[in-house]
Image (cartoon, rainbow, N blue to C red):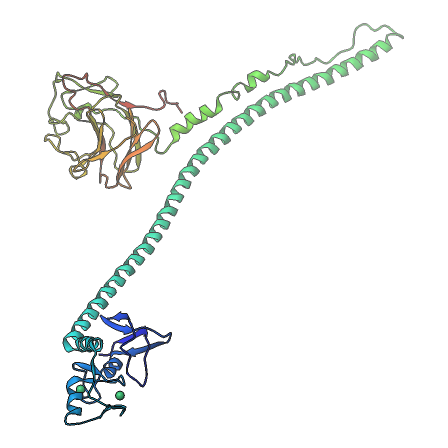
Length: 467
Ligand SMILES: [Zn+2]
Ligand SMILES: [Zn+2]
């Protein structure tokens, strides 16, 4: 096998290489001569030729150098000069020497050994193996990098697609809000226009009546004035017949204040209240389902507060009721659309809340996780917040939320938790429930040291606007 070396070397094309020059390069462990600023390419067979004895035509064995600087195997030149008496000659350049003198060239000997080693079958086989492995490695790496490139390109497409989907979604949500506002504005302006028209109409009628009365009065006045003129000539028995005049109410000042009072109002707040009730994902006014309550849970009369008590309430046992864990569900279940609700946990040091599948087994003790039909957030020891995965996912929250928002998107199968104070996202499950699910709560067992604190379902606005 020819290996191409492309290095800067000094080569004497017709003479042997001088051993006096320094070695400068090493390729495959083989040293090369210092350059004289000429760059050439040559192969190991060139080198092998240079290190071949002109007598035996094989690589030098114990190379020796004559004064003419030609090299031969020590045995070859000895054999060549054997029997010669007196002067001897160089078999290559025929230069005469007075005696059989040569010098062992260890450097060339070392070089020959290296060339012999690097051109041996074992070495070449080894080299081929290394090359094969290298090729294999680089092909594999190239394939890996190619996969990376494809993956990156795919990811970029996904990011662009998801981004534009989300943009469309955000725009849609705002369009809906704008529409609500637009409708409210149109409605209010229409009402104002109607009221204005009514007032104008009323005044216009009064004006017409007044003008009619004016015409009657002018007419009667004319009759009376003519009568007055006639009086100078003769005295009639009675006044002329006059047409009855329409009685017109006195025109009052227009009550600007009364007319505008409805519009000099906290219009933005009123509109916001109206908007609130039109929100697609506005807070659902949940109530607790007492039928599901663990006997240790007491529910307020209005079914918006649940608290854990030492004393169990008498209960009827059925499939809906939690009997092992201190849990309760809301009465409202959801299986399509988007729903949001808010829960007040106050400063209670311990609670679980979220969403439970309708199908959960309520009579056995189960670890809360999506696998067992629960998507929950939990608090333990007053400051250890976790998402109810298996194992739990600890959450580092900036503050201790007292009001929590839960968002259930049945269509996208998402359950997300928010700090309702600033609507910052605390955790989101993307593998939400299939089928019907209910808002889920557990005030947990408070223990004797802590006073049990209720979980409250919040309703917004406090007094909803009636349509
Ligand atoms: Zn030889
Ligand atoms: Zn010579």
